[in-house]
Length: 249
Image 1: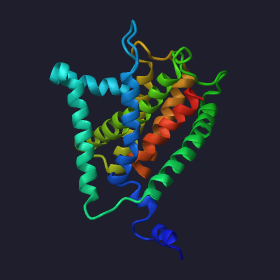
Image 2: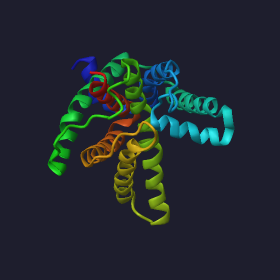
Image 3: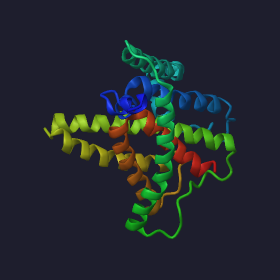
């Protein structure tokens, strides 16, 4: 058996280590860096500068507490917490570049399968007359579309999967006494509804249609399941790549 096969069959297989913070969070780091660079280059408009909605929501919470220092405080907390989790996980371990390559390949395949699978499920439920396309996208530049795609993968997964779904599941266990499985299903469904609804809020929100709402709700369930099975990094990249294929291509 080759060394690679031994690794894949052993206790520290690719499927396990790719979920660990040292891989999952470092894998998501390029999304953060490129998104922030592209967002900083966006010109202001009559309705404000374009940012990902989940990014704006998270940042606004810090602005409410820290005022004009809110955006800086948000970034410091985000990077600081991520660095602490990676540092704690790195003790006595080393990084294998092949794992990152495998994660990128996996996320690419999942992103390609995502549109087919979720689109087919939505079609069976709604029977739409037109495919989903964000109303506000056509006039945007290529760099803006890419920025929004990366921001969707990073910040929407952070807000709706890491924060909201986890919080809803915790509340269900504490206040209703539900078992983890039932609490998780409830949190996933409610989180998917909130995830879909968020796309229609604000000056750059899309026009509400039944097809787009159901599509995004099913997508929310899919991403929640993927997050639980494969961790944050692969889920964020799958979401970002799918959006990039749709909006940039």
